[in-house]
Length: 424
Image 1 (cartoon, one colour):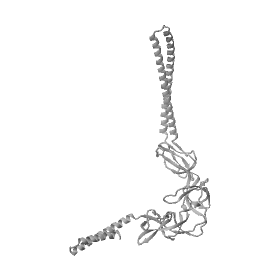
Image 2: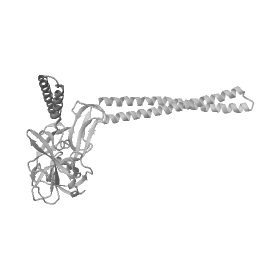
Image 3: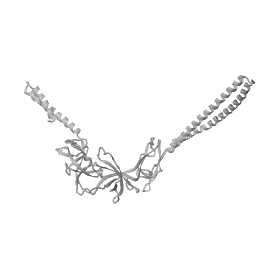
Image 4: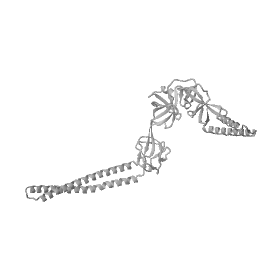
């Protein structure tokens, strides 16, 4: 019994109880009230059900005729990619100018090739040059001060030497009773005063030297900051992204370009766990692309992910391919032929994203098939046995037939028999 019927029954029972000992007209009025409440409850349920109906995407199961071996679709990625950033902040003053194939000249942009060391862009240098001049001027002021301090030290040292000679002579006279004690004490005090002057001059000289070193460091840092306004390419590569324009303000550490090394590329594709045993590190792989008909490229498996993607449930595999002629472009879709056993018989296949773990049997797989019930779409979980993978498709057996609509998106958020809403 549905909640709608339960609500109606309860209300009707309450109406009948309240009508005992009353006129027949009162009983009819109560029954009408119960019917109205039932209608309102049903409307609210239908509205809530519509709002909570999961939205899914579907594709048809199809008969697939595999060729010998296993083919996978893969996207081309750079072997190495760097974001090139300005160390300091400022306004972009210039951008590398390049000549295009039609002879026109313009700022470097996506797709342009640049050599290592090429000046990609410059920031306005006037502010940085002013800081260099200020730091250099402050450092230069220390020079005359140091000369005065050195002269004062020499003068204090000479006075100390004279005071020591005077004290030595007075001390001899004092011991021979030829000089008074006040003369002796005065000569001794004079030595101490001149020693203090020498130490003070030395301390000042050392402090000035430390200040000069700090100011010279400031000069060096200002010059480095000035040189950092020039942004150079760290490697040979293709510009895959330009983030700046002439006149734009760049923050400290702001990105300016993204450069990819296309001398070798990596193609990435996903395989189900049932196919991992057919892949080995270093295995030779042949690559083709519809964009380059008649051409093949040879690569080797250089990485096999140890963990499956949580969403797609496939393991990522990377193949490194030499690309000296730059024929394989970043983002290009290619086909990889992985050696394997031939499958001459056509087989039923579904998208890999349609396959989920069975909720009824651990270690088994299922797909959700759409079953129509009037104008409603219900998702039925049907257990299948998975087979060979072919790009984004995987062969299955049991539970479904060619032409069945299988849920490919949203299948992890539904349960068997649940009503769903299909979207494109």
